[in-house]
Image (cartoon, rainbow, N blue to C red; front, side):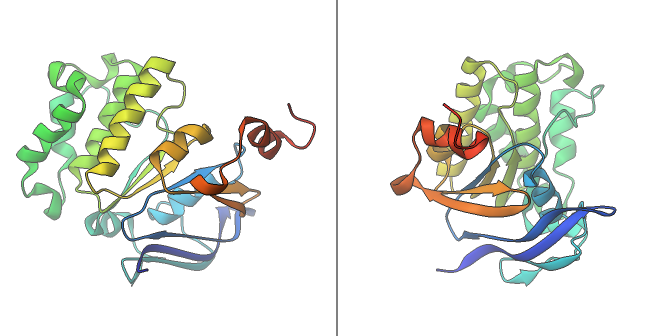
Length: 240
């Protein structure tokens, strides 16, 4: 099968601290993958390296057959590889509508931007209802919806979401997961970082367990772990 994204033996880190250790993952055409594992073990670093925010020291990143290992972020975004990072990275004093319109700044994104804006409002009705509201006045869940909406305005060919449901109430988490599922069903492949393995399995085709900057296990729906096994994966054999 053709690969949309291929990451081969990647090393990356911050200064003298190496976080990724010869890690290799891939995303085939038409599939979505999930990344999970303990905090601080390289999942976010992986997304930053893929999106050009962090330069790998060794290894190779190929997107749709093109080497993007040393490409800069604007070129990666223009190619359609879009990263919605963890946390609140929005401009608080901008209105929802302004924020979404600004997101469509690239050449590819400017085409049919109005149509995509309506699609974002359809996916996230709350944003449509509050389009004149400032981003800083939104709840955590609404800010996450806006962040994903901005990513969709960039016309993703592959969308990377870093812990999109972190800190949300169960109701909002379910609502956001349902919207992410719709994005996938509409033909946008995903890389989702998430701690909830059950949620990840409902959104993606395969999972990678990341520990100490390396892949230690690959999981699909046929070999999915139960709750007790997930606890052992995270916390060791003594967990229950």
